[in-house]
Length: 288
Length: 206
Image 1 (cartoon, rainbow over the protein chains, first blue to last red):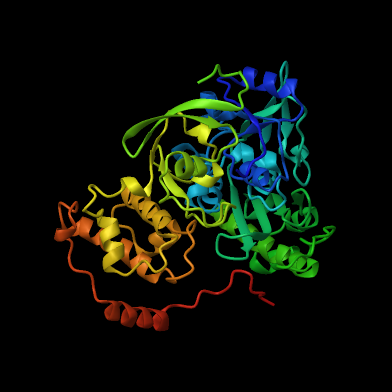
Image 2: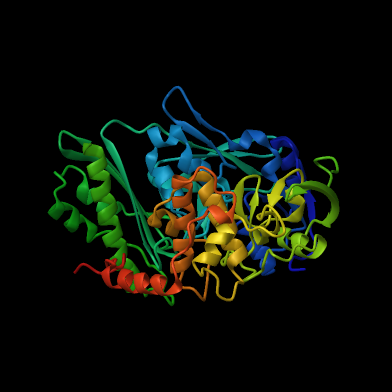
């Protein structure tokens, strides 16, 4: 028996789930379980009660709003993100990232909501959510809050959630015409442990960069915007030389960690390489 | 099952395992893999790592391949699950995928094999004739420390080909005879020599 004793319930509504979570500060929501069950095995986490969100049907839908935004239910599994006709049409970058997460088994259980709420600094969706300017829709026992992705990640494993609250959906705004996206990661193996992520959105207007949002992952406890690189791109005709030059500033202001796989200096340099590639991919997307 | 909001340390669950109805009481903390092995006695589902990395505990849960060490047994309430014991149609007859693993020598110590068989089944159910690249990609969640994967990939590829060429693949007798191990080894050596060397994604450009 690997897990410590734990209570379990499977509420059928969001309201019921928030009530149970509010009543016990050591209760935790169970989404796909692909991280939580593992940290429970290691006794790193020992919740008193697991509130299984898999019994709430409304949390697993992908809906297209009239304004072109998509609302992704927090319990949508990676495999559904990959296959969603809606996302493939409106925000294909989400499907592309989902298709390469972990492995087939994990993609059949892991959820986008669990991913962002776990707030692992090496996760793929947090930097992508910042670049997409997504909004987190959070419900508590008697309130609802909308939190911009930029304010949702407060530190490693520290989402902006209060007692009793659960993330119910993520709203991703419509893509502005002329905008392309790119996502690049440096990994230990092909779909393995990530060392650096870079998510880029580039808006083009008359051949010139009108706006850029570049977010780096794995270089800090939270995803960080590469603002100096963004500024270096805006107003420029983005030839390869210009992007190379701008990417030199991607590592500015970041203080990445060193570990067995990559030193801080290597991570910083690779942040520039991944950011440049993501931006080139985004520019190609914006032009097509 | 208890009322949805009621917190329980142990719950009765009903599910279908390899086509048979099962009723059991499980502790909330019991992992699905432990339930399958210890309570149902189906020890074909293996525990290789306990950390969700190796895929030896893979089963098919409501049509989806999952790792049974990363799910609670209580979450299997109402589900249909398939373990390796449910793969062969009869006691004295192998499933075509098992037959192909045998023919292609895709098994060495055998510890990872149940997970690979179910991963292969899940892939072939969805994509009956996968390319080698698709097979390799689909097997990412399963580790094998013996074979180097080459014969596993080839075994799965051969089932896909049977599917294309034969209308009925349910009996092993209809499967074309597998190549000899020597042929496999020769091909593997050629493949290694001719294989493109994939550049490391992290190589520095300047």
